Length: 328
Ligand code: AHM
Ligand code: MG
Image (cartoon, rainbow, N blue to C red; front, side, top):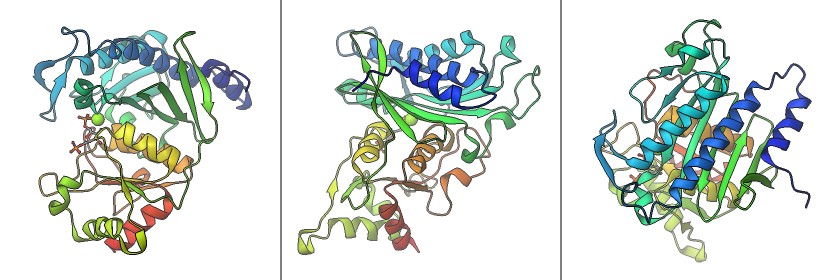
């Protein structure tokens, strides 16, 4: 197979779009650079006491922030601000959006979860960076405003994630399918390894925190019961590590469904619309699957606040349809 680096792939695809100015490509390169820096430090996480461990701070959502979360957050901000193609960011680790005052002529805003599934760092299980890119709606040359960020997911220009696992892989879409690039550490380049990813159907696999079963609504319980029904040896496999990027990545490639429904403790669900669900929904639809909150297509939800949460059911379309059927 011919070696195609992420940069080459981006350049070729950019040429296909008349009027493309290279800014979006620049952003994707910034994110890939940041992810290489994150990967470098993550790979030492098991060794270095000063990196691993709690910062003894909590973020706006009351969750513990690990040092590597902060590091990933800082690196992403720095890389995006340096290049000049981004006028502002919103991050799961920041209380509010950040406007880059020295980049007011840039067209794009980027939203991200710098290190998703960070409780997995301590146990050396996969974690990831998730990102979502929108074109700003405010005027060029002015500071960005909350409306630049609070757009429905179907307005995303690009979205993707980097999974830091047994290999590091960057998966993204600009609405022309989904492509995956594996980092070759010997040359420091992401190389095209998974072109045009499509999520299979007919796969009997689900990912959920089943410990919450008693707090799920009836329709979700019925779906889980269906998955566990061993009549005719047709019970489904449960695969869940508690890192959305890892669980989603598995299902994206192999087929299956990831669900994080509302629970009694988290009546709006746990995962964030803007940083986790929207980008994954864009990818999943581009790979032929579906993503819903149970009430609405994820990409149609009108955000009200940056950090808002939503229940999510995402994966192979046959399985998403099935859970919706049980919830009717
Ligand atoms: P985080 O962004 O604070 O890491 O939390 C999000 C994570 C997801 O990656 C994962 O799917 C989910 O929380 C797991 O939650 P739970 O531990 O309740 O199963
Ligand atoms: Mg997260």
